[in-house]
Image 1 (cartoon, rainbow, N blue to C red):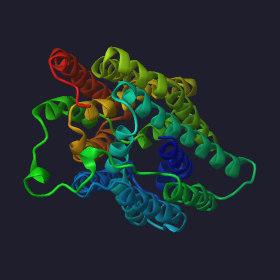
Image 2: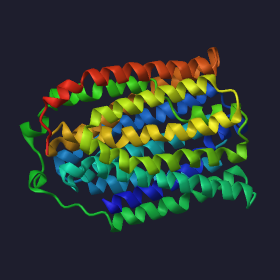
Image 3: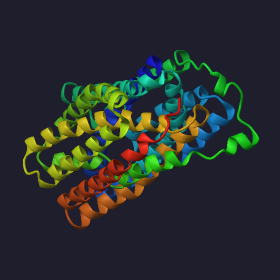
Image 4: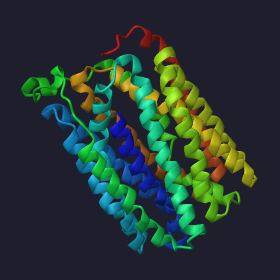
Length: 385
């Protein structure tokens, strides 16, 4: 668990050197439209989604997680800094797609390996801790970007090259420190009919509301553009991103642990309702300080939901199906990211930012109601160990 957390910390540090600057780079430097930002981010997540389904299934079939994990981190770390040489939005799209191929290869096998590394009564806390490490990296990354921009006066393109350093360290830790101990239920590759056993109905019912929520959960690049629109200076955009991830990191472990005690769905419902309130706030915001406050509140959404959702996925399936289950979970969420981001960008361009954020808030409320109504069913479902 600790090695996987360290890999995620370093990877996110690398990724988040670039992430808060990328929408501004696309719109301000390369002249891309807001809708193009949505297309790039949505398409990248959709590619990752398709590969997560395949990689999760394959890791169950061959009973090996680590090779896909290392390959995924390695590919992403290799191509990510190449944003520095992009000349058009199409170049950024190609780089982002390749980066997300790496994410698609590693995501489901990593989560399945993490679920197997802890007892069921600590599952929510383990996923929360992993997300906390991930978000801690997302604190360090923008601070590095801020230091490069403000103190070293580096051009934005040069800052992107710096992301190669923590990315390389992440691959090294994955190779050396991540261990895979195959338990009895994964001791041999899954063959024939066993490889085709369908995931249980309770799994599909459990993640259905997540899909509705995701349709209103577009790329966070739009939040950064909205912060800029509200008057946050470009040089301070990485600091806004830092504030967001400080809250994410601080709230993820307690949120995951709380889901171990009171259940997954109550935490998810609370997080989605908070998300709706934050998006409504972005729709109505008029001042720079509103952006800072809303980003901080937005971070708590992840503390309530990320560890809880992943623990719920692990709860609903047998251990030998977890790679496949996490693949479908990540895959469906990622696939919904493309229409979500494209639709959000279209509504922003065609109507206004406020209308787009109001739409996202409404979908989050609908998903929260659906998840709450399914809570009684959860109480009648056995938890898979």
